[in-house]
Image: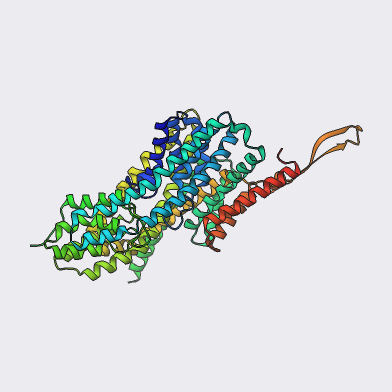
Length: 268
Length: 288
């Protein structure tokens, strides 16, 4: 692996992390999503096809990692860029299942490092409040960007970019040292595949916690479930069906309220 | 003479927020400094003396937190209130209390309606497209990269302007009209169906229990090699397809919401279960 590839991937790890300079919409919620991250790594490494083979299962596993703050299970940006890059570096000559297993393993390692770095930057940002308070006291509106954008991002960049470069260098060094396809025992690969398949439930469980507000709504969840298991629809077909159902539902509940409003008008 | 914020300043305030809202997140003021940066051009334009600016800036960097993309409505509302304050129609105390009051509802709407519903749905559609075109799987992620940021940018900018124009009254009128609840209910329905389908498609758990034996065929007297006498996984799936993935997902949901397990703890539990299942699988000859 070339130096420029390592630096470029590390740069994207920083851009895709929470609160990078390009904003959470473009960063954390776009570049930080495993599906997008795997495309970026694939382009940098020149193997988009294999990158997406790893990226799609990772995306499903981490579907529930959406909100910064309380519910950050894992630093997603670190997890997926390291996971996909690790699988591509070390997975030469492996079949699809093994490649995914390797991706899951490195995503775990990357996510763990990322989590430490997130906590570090979270702590390092604290003194910035003093800087902001000083400029505010002086009424210096033109300088309010300094504590937030300039200092905050110096810390953010240092916490994301540097450890990422170190991590990627170690991966790259390891890949030239040993033949991982034969080194990793078969049982570990099986366990990682089993783990990956089960981890998808974490993503789904967390999303359900946002969506389920009333008990009866569990039935709607089951409806989507059986559309796949009994009716064998693919995801695209389910998505279209779901959009139609929710539009009809919206129209019907909107109608109800206008009718009752008219009814009340009658009673007056 | 009444003061009025120029369109340029409002745009600057919005862009400062949209791009830099997470730049200095920490436990003390959360997004406070970012909010201050967003308010800085507004304050600079509205107030003349250093004392006024200083006071306004100090109240702009206090504790603030929200789901930032939908939360741009808060910035809009506070812009409107600062303008009113500069014209003597509002008070600093009111601005501060409104700002704090907005934290709860805007984070709730942002997290559940936008982030937890729209993102998974868009990603799911992107994944489906990638899988539908095996020769060009990059189409899916590229579509997401265009659709999500653009859509969110317009929504965020619209909400910012809405907040500025109609203020707190406008927002509460909108919320009281029940339109938002209906929209949320419908989006929730969409989200739940898609989540159900995703669970069925991608969560996988097997019971790796299989009894394989060589048995004697009584009619011919031959020994039949490697006959599967019992396969727990196939049996379960014949009764209810993908029953175990469903139960696992509901179990995780239960532990996460009702028992307040952290995601890391859940991850650990899943890892232990995966190792145990792999062990059982090798022991009964399901793998290998």
